[in-house]
Length: 253
View (tube, rainbow, N blue to C red):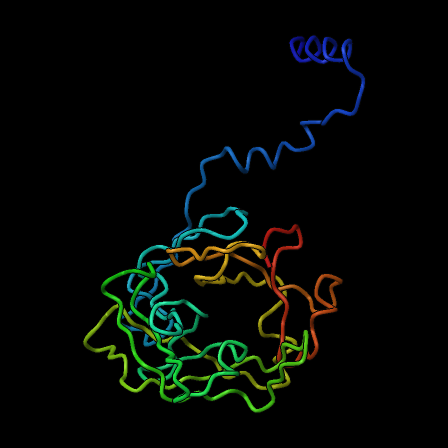
């Protein structure tokens, strides 16, 4: 304590100004320098038919902007949509051996047979993994109510069909996502509940103004937020089909 007072006094002799109260930032500093233990989420992919990777999910309780590398094989349902063979366009998830779910804004302007090929790569965590399996898309189903109107993200959903199926039985690196049926009256009240912990995954840009795509699949933890919260209210057009998630403190969402 005496040393802290002496240093402060000497600095004040030579320069008067505004200084930072380090004690105010104690928790933030500790969150950076403290060694964090990853939380393990296991799933029995033998007894459960969907939603399980072939390896456990490992989540670090951090607030790193942009997320962290996902463990190999922990999100086996994740796929990469690519134009002209190798260029990553958007993420998606396996619904079955032949159907993929993605965002409508990724494919709404595409037309199969127009000369621009659209493929789906699956079975990898690293985008350049030589073990990945690639299939060609032969049908695009964009939700009929989707619109390209600015800032209107309602019905931003599409389903793709691949010419040749991803065969789960012969490749354990694949798995499909689970989609629950929820009765409409419960959608805005019970699913998902405010404060639920979610994980966003993908190979997208790590910064909104970034240029480089990550090689490894990224994962980031977020929490559902009340749609009426000021951070969400301006972006939510229809609470029946949309919900808000992120971190109020910033850095994600």
